[in-house]
Image (cartoon, rainbow, N blue to C red; front, side, top):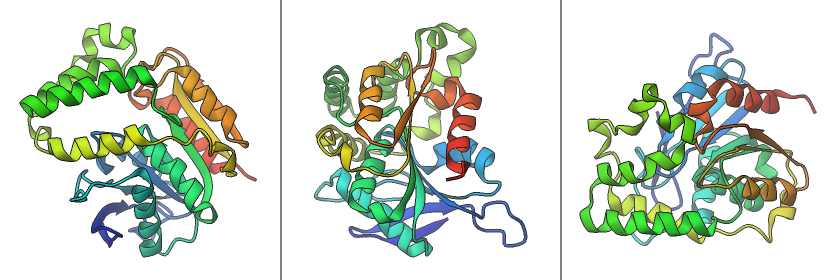
Length: 273
């Protein structure tokens, strides 16, 4: 675990480049940016799958994991500058960046603000501007969360919409809809709200053409929060982007189709040229 002194305070991140005797964890650098409600730990399965030959930096965004929030709020641009600060501290000139959902917004902003520091870009289950239907849903979730301050209640409202109908209907997937007891206090309502407000205000639609890094957009065909049309618009708007649609999957493609998702992203990150 590492801590960087960022523009607004400490930033917590993990680094797989800890064993100098082997190739595991070293090589091209990949920054991993989590979604709303997550932290760097959500990348553990990918770190296990991708760390052979790659150096992986998983960052806790403000108000997540070990990184405190900002008293006066923040924007997605602020989070992108936090990523730059981590790269500076890690001694990394440029890196690939993989962003999931909220992390995908930070990744886009990083590509726009710090283009010289970016090699390849992977945008997973994300968009250039939040869809109005998702905005209305999450606004309602926030209103409930502010009133009763129950992380478990908030999770119960959101969880069914993160997956495809078939995944939700399968009894064997019931554990995905139960918030672990030790997770309820991981993030305060205020921290979740600050991240959501930054996410809600983000709009890169008019700036996508300025992203010139090779880009892979990964989307679930049945994503209820990020409609496939929004992912297609993202891929169309970035000049060097291509879309990989995961058929039958919802928002959490990493949970519903983990092998296809990990193989697709790893293939893009390690491709020559």
